[in-house]
Length: 310
Image (cartoon, rainbow, N blue to C red):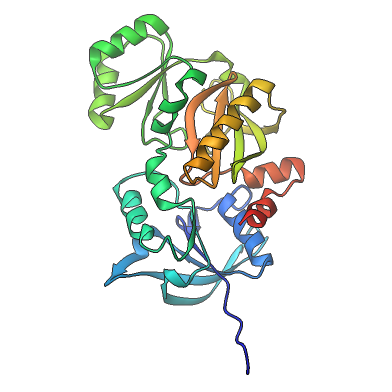
C-alpha cells in the first residue's frame, strides 16, 4: 500500500503583497517560519473569498516566500481552493475593520470547526480592538466614548488636552490632539465617525509607547515605539522608531490579566499598547504586528513560539 503524504497547507488572508514592507512585515515573518516547517502557502485577499453552496472557496496564489528584500515571493500556481482543506488559516489582512472585514469573519466561521483559524473569526468580531478595552477601564486614562456634544464638552473641561480617535481607526490614522474644545473640528469628526473615543492626553507618549506581544495566553516580549519629533503617533508607519525595553512590574501585571482575558475569548495572537504605564485601549487582534521588528532588535524569533504553540 502506498501512502500519499497529505499536503500541509497554510492559507493566508492578507492585504495586497504590493503593500508589504519586507523589513517589518509580521505576516511574511510568520509565513517564512511556516515554510521551514513544511507548509505550502496559499495566499489570497478578502475580495477573493466566496461562499458557494456550503463551501468556502478562494481564488488564490500558491507561492514561495524568500528572505530577500527585492524579490521576496514567487507565484508557483494560481488556483481555486476549498479552504476547508487547509490545515491552518491566518487572518492577516490589515484594518480598517469595516463591513468587508466583518463579512469575511462570518464566511470563515463556516469552516472554523475543520480548520484552525488564527485569530478565530468569531473572536475577532467579539473582541473589537478599541471597544473591548471597556472591560479594562480601571487600567486606562480618563476615557469617553460618545457622540453627545454636551458629554464631550464636559470631558474637555475636566481633562483639557484630549486625544481624539475613531473606534475603527488603525495605524494612527486620524488620531488628533486637541488642546481645547473645538466645535467645528469635533462636529466634522462626529459626522464622519459617529461614536468617537476621547482620552486624556498622556504627555509621556513623547518617550514612546509599549507594544506587548501576547501569544497563546502568554506575554512573549515587547518593544517601545518612539514618535518622531513633534508627533504624538507611536505607529512605525508614521515614522516612529522601535527600541527594546523592559516592562515595569505594573505593565506585566496588567498584561497578564489581559492575556488571560484574551485566551478566554479564544484570541491566540494580540498586540497590547501602553503609554505611561496605562492601557490606551488598543488591543490589536485583527492583524497584530511587531514580531519581525522584535527579532531584529533582540535576535529572538517569536514566530518559532507561535508555530510551536499551534
